[in-house]
Figure (cartoon, one colour):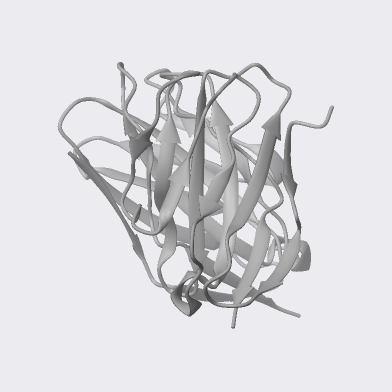
Length: 112
Length: 114
């Protein structure tokens, strides 16, 4: 059982470049989320989607965009990367309303 | 609105000692409460959850947590720490019902000394 698959696992990126982090789930969960994890700040929600075709902004959405064309995929795009977006990014999913999240292994992004 | 406070960014214990990680929450409606564990270079995985059934919840790896409404707490405990318990632990809260998004605490790093 794969659960949540994230790609790439690690990436070094020049500032100003466009980058898409991929996330796919095979659990048919309605809700999906993107978090960033930074030392001392815990997990901060970037964007979420309660169901295919809808998305919403989280705590730190600026500089990021998402789409939810189908149930399984929830890509996160950095249109023009900046060094402050250096972080570990986690995708997660859940059955809507349960609150129990299933996480991917993370994507470590370094913006130089 | 909901929030989570984890007291102590780092907790250090000796192997075999009691583990106590503190979590206090605020929620405008009865909450669902969760503890997650993150081992180095991995994603988070669920340790245990409270969803309005028994107030003492048992999870994986010998951990348990007790929901205390009067104290708005959901502290995580384990009677005897193992070296393999060294990890980051996150408490999360979600108001019951609806499509509310869970709110996470900032995490507590558990350090286990031999």
